Amino acid sequence: MPLPKVTELELNEIKIIEPKVFCDARGYSCEMFSSADLKAVGIDCKFVLDYQSYSKKKGTLRGIHFQNAPSAQAKIMRVLTGSLRDVVVDLRKNSPNYGKWTSIVLSASDFKQIFIPRGFGHGFVTLEDNTTVLYKLDDYYNSETARTIRWNDPEIAIDWQIDKPIISERDANAVSLNECDICF
Image (cartoon, rainbow, N blue to C red; front, side, top):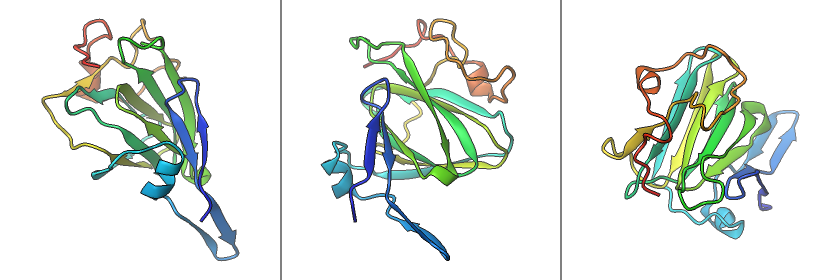
């Protein structure tokens, strides 16, 4: 199989992975995960967990979530059904991009995946009803290190392109970037 196409977003460590998709009259086939191929394109993580998320309604916003060290997580995410606007925030305090964000629209039909290394916060807003997301994570969930930053923090100023998202209690009660105990 040919290596996937990899493109870096504005925050250079954030990568979009596009697998080679083979289509014919029957449908399609593609290789969605190969640790050897990822290593060949500069992503060298040992993924230990797959996690799936389903959002019933368009306008569901999840994030900005991350886990502090020592349980920080790198992740590869892809959309299985529907579409979303994916947002990533640099939370590494010594980075020249600290507090900056980037976003991309991902859909089930484009097969694109996003790689988010450790040290970044992540969130998304669904653009369609019935959106399902699959994550590959390189560490397990740890409730003691899990953190949430306010989705509408004016210091970060993310343009979610939505005014009244559907959010969880966790996201509604999140702290600002300045109030969060980030350990990167």
